[in-house]
Length: 154
Image (tube, rainbow, N blue to C red; front, side, top):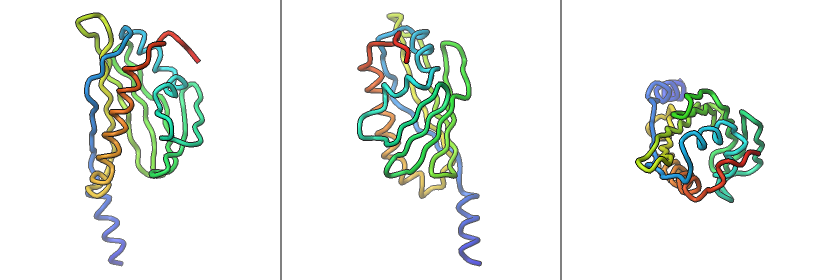
């Protein structure tokens, strides 16, 4: 009975945790990045080597395994032309999350992007996830900044 109340307490304590990347400066226009990332298959360009296993990507969904987390499922859920792309996902077989790409135009006409990840996490999971999620977002922004072939489609 005590284990049940602890479990219920953890569920009630879960709140939305948001993690945000720094603003990345890309080598393309906002419309080019928008067109590129709305086809989820193109996201494989930004997945660093040795981060995921069993990657399967289709036009608007993907699934993969992260050794420290388990199976992850992601689908394209919202598109605001040239401004925002939202992917919804599920990890740890019970934690829903969203990954948001906010796209903006910089002074030089190129794209800037901020990536946000939001998930319902209890305080313990938030503490455990904070470092790995922040590292993931930084690696994702670095890969996007290094990428130059935005017009390429898979």
